[in-house]
Image (cartoon, rainbow, N blue to C red; front, side, top):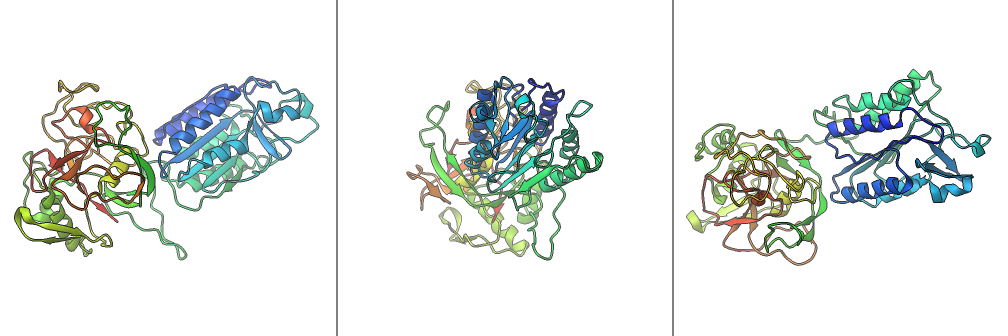
Length: 481
């Protein structure tokens, strides 16, 4: 958020604009309010809270540049149209920073970063003899990092160039690849202190004790003597556990009658970035059944039974405990799942949808629409009510399209992906770690495919097939505990 007015500041709108661009470059969705009044500012906070509430994995970043004052131990951000004749009007006419912190805390997400480049000199004449700058944090919520452009009771420079003094250094560190979140703010504080010759020293208040990166290309964290960091398996993405609404709302276009929306909680797991490729499948199974040949194309023409056998054989090759016990032969095989096993397995339907959505609540992880520049499907189908486009008539190589915000490729389109669950109606009410019906005739597939129109690619869409069925439309990806 940026603002001007009262004692005019030169850089807040530039600051907000450039921070927006930097965050978008890191994969954030940004809602920017320039020169906002109080209603607009509070509305932006409410919208941010709502988006963060969708997933426990979400990272929130609240940035404000402009005037800020303190009064009776509370900090206030000053709206553009503020008419504040004395300090006693602040609670009713300015935005209370503590309210912002408390509101974001109710989202229940992984991490919230609140950055306030607002410790400039108090702009009101009634306060010239009083306290300058912002005060300390009254109550810091857990899993938050709060950064002030300067220390409590001090003022910060508006800057001589395009950006404020503090924001100039913050932008530099946000754009430096491979930095962990705490390191971004530590370096920014150090840079500001040194560049100001100790006249401006940022204040950082942290109640976040995990490791987090804001963009791609993060440097690995080295294990220490006091804390070891598990290594993410090569080709996998760590999916943190969380709670989400599985299924689709009644208002979603072209929804199925077995997509009843319900609250689901899943634990964390590792998921393959890509659908299992033909190279990977052949290396384990010694054969390649695919119709469209290519080592980096997804393996297809595989049954559900083929997929679970691949999981077991790959686990055994790598010294892991196989997840499945397979009994019988042919179409009469039965499969049981050892949930404590360390080996590869198929995702549950709930895990698959949670990972596909990547914190979104829209029909696609790309929003309300999807295009053939974002996924491989039949964009020219007469049944396609979504954006039209290319029809490639075959599978595409792993990594051909931009991944979702959690780093997973082809969750929409290319090939349908087998899941563990038997296909049936959802159970009523909230669920934790659901694994589907105890028995059935059909297994679940998710994600849509190259032959299908866009509405089949929706995050909530459910397909089913007998576990022995093979077609060049069906493939799979694997997960690990």
